[in-house]
Image 1 (cartoon, rainbow, N blue to C red):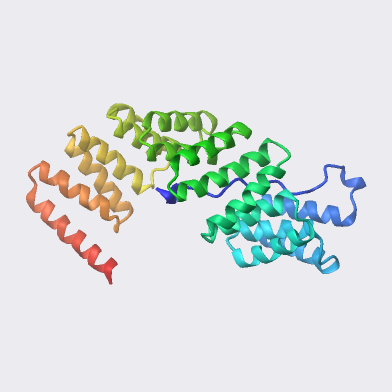
Image 2: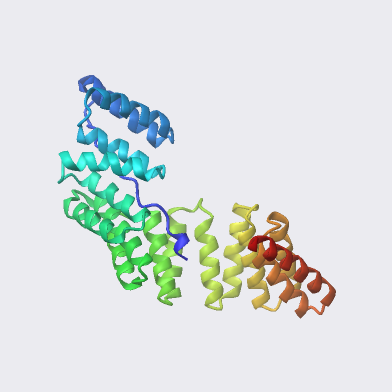
Length: 301
């Protein structure tokens, strides 16, 4: 379940809001770097920040911006180095504290992450910054299995600014607390806010299935398949929902689609074995059991 947690919110950079005509050359270059980062051109952003740092190597703002790009790219050592230099020059700046907290979080140093993120929360100037810090603190609590605290942080994050990540994370904290109705409400809100995204339908379908609302679960999972027909996991989950309704032939059909899309999908094979046995198809179950044993043996090598 921890794998369902996603990256914390990306904060906007420290770029001035003045018109291009009154910006200095360095400020214009920083604006270009931020725009490149927003468009996914991280290499371009890093190159611009690096060029600026050649002329101003101790500029905390530029160091923090480049460090944040490294952090988002998973280059944690490089990020930590830049952010450490930024904090040495500007210890009470929110952004380097926040991103240093994310670096520590990704490195598994929860104590260090908390220290930086709590300071970032204290320094936050608006709802967006508070929301990002609270979400990251919630992720720490989740990984520490303190789901009550995680839910509180994610709720505070939503109060600061509604975001996909915070609702998604709170839903999984609620699932861990056996609060499926609360999780269902969060996934429903995500569907209202982000109707183009598949995963809230997928997860709400799973949630509704656990609650015994199988027809509603099938509707959600079918919608998810319609939105992303190449996702083997959703077919497996819909197959399991059919099996809960004792519609084993339909379950087999979905499990077969899942293993066709992902021939190494061990859970789908195990589920299909159970469905074949319910249908009395012992030979097919035996064949799947052999295939599953081969997959498990291969994984164990």
